[in-house]
Image (cartoon, rainbow, N blue to C red):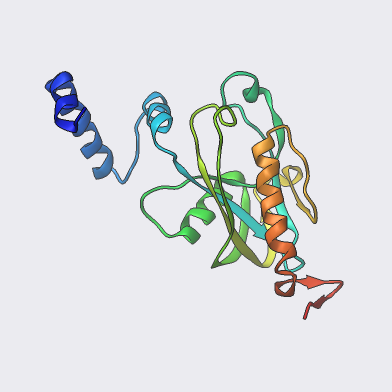
Length: 196
């Protein structure tokens, strides 16, 4: 069946509404105004997500303990550790997106993003309640001290190894980061000095 035949089977008015909605979303810099529409789009399009791998000079990874309350079903009951992050928007640099996601979670820190990607993971059917995100592990180097929004301090920790979580894909993201880190130890301080 060709594209033209498919279109002739669909009501042209419905397609016109769909196209107008897409134009409006594009005009609003990719903003989808309601959760149901956002969820429906994710059922057909893998949505890229920025996973912010904030690391200190020793190569330890920052994790955030949070409640996955926006997820449906049993997944919505999970309170566990994960790499901070969120969905990418059409506008802004990777560094801008990383900063936005960290600030949203309560992290107040200066960092540098050097175009380092620790890996990319496409979520499989059933791993995510909404769709099939494409997680991009963006390595951000902490510059100076880290602070947290008051009241959130206990929700963060640096780890030097994988911390298994109730969401297997989030454990997989950590495994990917530490695989990358362990193959790039020369970039980090270990035992108080920079590795060779």
